[in-house]
Length: 403
Image 1 (cartoon, rainbow, N blue to C red):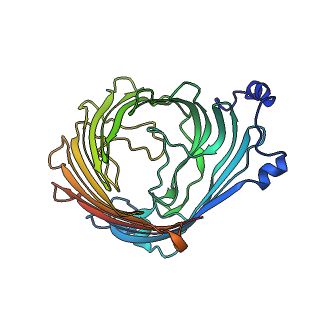
Image 2: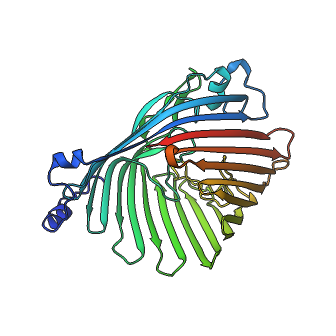
Image 3: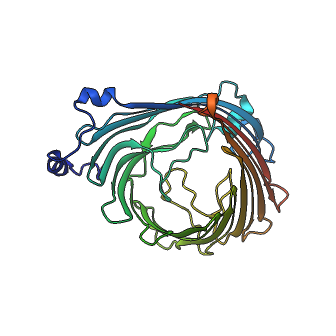
């Protein structure tokens, strides 16, 4: 890891004399560390509106099947010792009841048994600068792990974050490897929880800046480069305010994908979103449009990044060249910890008979009292395509206990 090779020695030596130590010894740092985890039981039912592939072949776009998954997440972080911390996170996934149809349909996202050490890092903090090196979860607009499946994507590399400038967060990072949800061999019809593998020949770089100097306004800018593939530039302005119990907001986003291959056109998209809320009710309307020249692929999203405002609840947004559409979402907190909502999106594509609309309904409830830590979530999505084929629907149920 090129960035990881940058020595922290000078920073460490400069800060030792004045650093506030949370633990008196290395043994105390480990003894006073924090453990947390999560038990998961999930059920997915997916209908692609297409017959299963002939001969039992694995094809994630064909078939009708359901799957039950169970898994455990365990996380441990030491106490701070001279500014240093260590952290580790295990993720596991098991689908013991999956039949052949489920294996063929879910092999690339939900079917894959095993466990993986998704986080194992060393972190050092001095003043308002934090450096984290090793396996880690990352959450930025262009590089992000998604928690929508049993296994969340993770990254191996180095990330440095600084907040010295007023109301400003700066971050720079390098990724050498990444861990996907599953690692599958469709020919051998075998799928396991994914391990870390090299990302591209020379990895990916990123720089992020977030500024909140103007009250209510958040300005975000990020650059990410997949070496010898593409440079991606993303910016967003989001304003939010409230008058008594009335909340409102306006946001805009713009992304450019600059492909390295000679003669290949750049891709881009823009989006706008307006939102408002009163009491327990919230709503937004969004519009996004992709330039005609090329797909606005978030090519540096090594993971589950999906920044476009018109993304669906279950499936990702559409970055196809020439696509444009809108989305409307409304949700209501019935009681504390319980929310219900619905989303409608309509997407128009350049290709004939390719337009589609999506309806999502969702609900979640976080228990309290004797069942504190336990929560359930239900999502249902139906996709209606203009063509005679291509429609689909999916149901997802999640039960989680966090401790």
